[in-house]
Length: 163
Image (cartoon, rainbow, N blue to C red):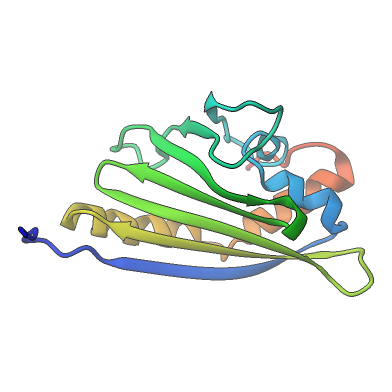
């Protein structure tokens, strides 16, 4: 068996955010189609979907926000709406990563806790370096940007525009 001269590295980060709406109202917003309602700049190009919003094994593409990579290919690798859980697997030529989101209703049912985990694996040395930059960029504000944008949407019915 031949092994690559470079070593794949895996890095991960987790954050729990608090959403000011009931679970049944906010969990659907983590699907790739409904995310457009609250995430400025999110424009997935759906390649395979047999329902209106989300299903396990749907496939879509997005543009890289790092500028030097081709489009990312995404799949909903796990979707358990009855457990308020979704997992994405994302592919790029030199790296791949998983995003898991587990929502739980907080005491009283008026708020939701969402645990978000990003796990990156480099496929090359360049992929390892890109993953470090991507993780740092994603968690620059410790996902407070997600929390603010998602909380803004149920309150106003509008997307929070950056700036």
